[in-house]
Image 1 (cartoon, rainbow, N blue to C red):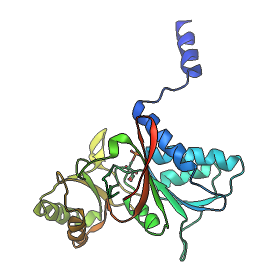
Image 2 (image 1 turned 90 degrees about the vertical axis):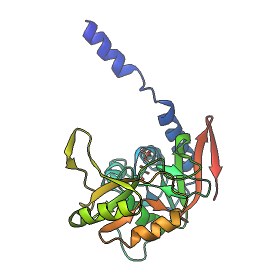
Image 3 (image 1 turned 90 degrees about the horizontal axis):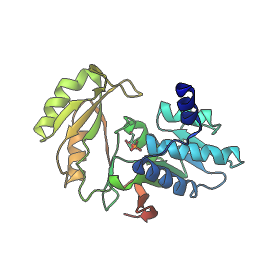
Image 4 (image 1 turned 180 degrees about the horizontal axis):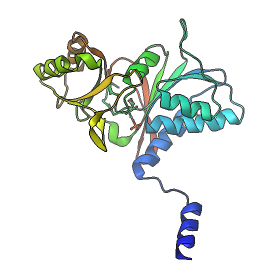
Length: 244
Ligand code: 5RP
């Protein structure tokens, strides 16, 4: 009887969100209000973006007409499950609005992204978007980028030399592995490795981005500059719109 009672409690009690998760959900709810009928959307990746996709799905089920392309296989599966019409990559495809989370954002809306491993598809879709709206909980706002290790997507063959080159730039690179099996690397949707680089504070993000681009084997880095047009950040329970 005790088991049955506690099982019933678990089933009926609404899942309490942590304060951070609640902020993510609130930021996503604010972003859903930016969506208009007929828009072509870029759908981000990560837990904040998942809140957005779920709330967008509810609007689509209520009759909103939008289409979108997802920035990861995980977001694509979620969007498909919710009935959001999906567009395959094709030449000439552009997006009215992309909505995505971030691992960090500074006052100029420079971003670190890729904590969810989707940086390549995210940068591709967001570069093809007229408007990138970032959605974030308050913990993501920093005065200077670099508290969060900078993710890189790396071709597996090139890994040893990429690690050497990142160290020469002053970074401490760590190959991303599964939490429950440190011998097993995490693969991106493109079957590449992910490397998280601790640089400490990155005051010259533009300079670092240029240097990373010259290293063979780095397919993409997680510095997103000049892309975000606005960010919705929840501070003290209130949605603030930040502009660069
Ligand atoms: C995925 C990303 C995510 O946007 C970033 O990691 C933030 O994730 P979350 O919303 O779960 O905090 O860049 O590649």
